[in-house]
Length: 148
Image (cartoon, rainbow, N blue to C red; front, side):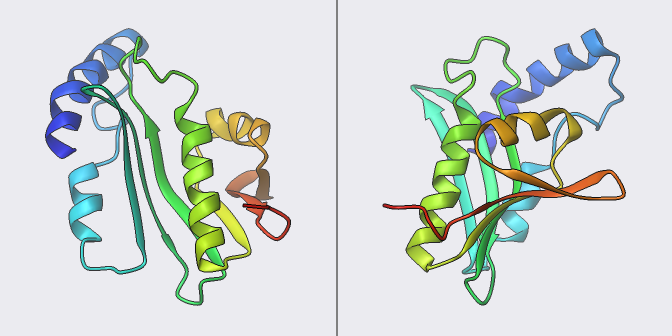
């Protein structure tokens, strides 16, 4: 997964930076560090979404120690403009978090620290933003009434 991220996503980030004038380092999380740093945590949730040989999405999260919630800490779709799962990565990640939560008996799914540009996408996919002082801390969804 990390090798595919470096090979497929990094070049697309360079193009994105040049086109949008984004400063270096602002375009992606260090997925290697996120995966490596959580490798010994039994509560972790990691997923890579693929279409054939294309890495189209990455998710990193965890369940809470008391199993009351599942949180997605990082969610990213491929920056490759023409990737084959355009528009599907967020619903897949939410389904993954929802059913992981249900399997653990958790009552809530959260996506933490969402970028302002995607809060509307999360809302369209059934999550509710939780804001303090106008800043969205997380988007959440109750799992109490979700049926398998």
